[in-house]
Image 1 (cartoon, helix red, strand yellow):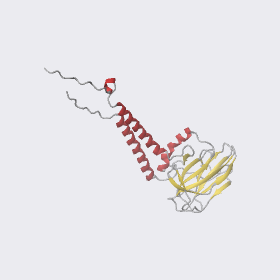
Image 2: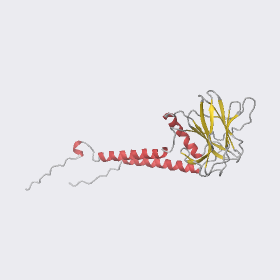
Image 3: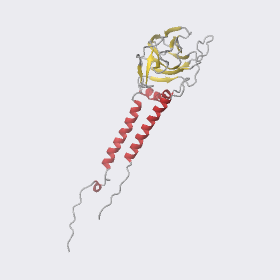
Amino acid sequence: MRRRMRQPRSSSAADHGRPPGRGLRRVLAVGAAQSVVAAVALLLAPLPVFTRLPGTEPLGAESDARSYAGEPLPAAIPIPPPDRSRAVFGYLGPEERFDAYVFIMPVTAEEGITVSVPLESGGEAMPALAILDARGERIAWSAEAGAAPDDHVYDAISLEKLRPTGPARVRFESGETYYVRVEPGPDGYRGPYVVNLAGTGRVSATEGLSATAKVPRIWLGLYGQSPLRLDGLARLSLGAGLCFASLLHAHRMRHPRRRVAARGR
């Protein structure tokens, strides 16, 4: 009777109490996590929220109420002061005489304020920008008829090319009230605009992260008299799809289907 020779068992991960393929799953999990980070970075990378804080005109707001004694612009919309760089997105509707904003300057400083419009709206028409003091007297005015078609800047918040007016440099005094008034101007402009307040203060990481919540409203046109923007809806849908696909990919990499291999005896 022949004795069967036993072959020596090869050392494997199972002999050491480790499930087979653990190292591979770890590598795949790291790759999946990196894909999620890449997808989020793809969505947030264009947003310069750490250097420029976005804001919006309230949806359906009408700030062009007529003045009365002691109140030059009684329906003006409060906004943060230009002690930091800010961008206020608004919309001049067909029946609006102007949009008005108000702030109290916390420090004495000379800052620049401009108004910009998307290249695709209004042809070469431009709105006018007026800065008023607490008495309603105009202290700065920027009402250029328009800029050259190739004179534009890329706005990394709205992801659009904008045409700006010439900057209005204003010296703001600490503790004083100021008004910003956006008007149709000589060209009778109607449509979206961006008021840019070029402050010199540093934006904290907390302020920047909290400001990202306003970006979807800007993309969708959910401010002022603006209609719903379908391009913004498509952009958000694409971003949501990328995030969902990345999360699904990560889940599948962390929990792969177990394949049962038949063992010969």
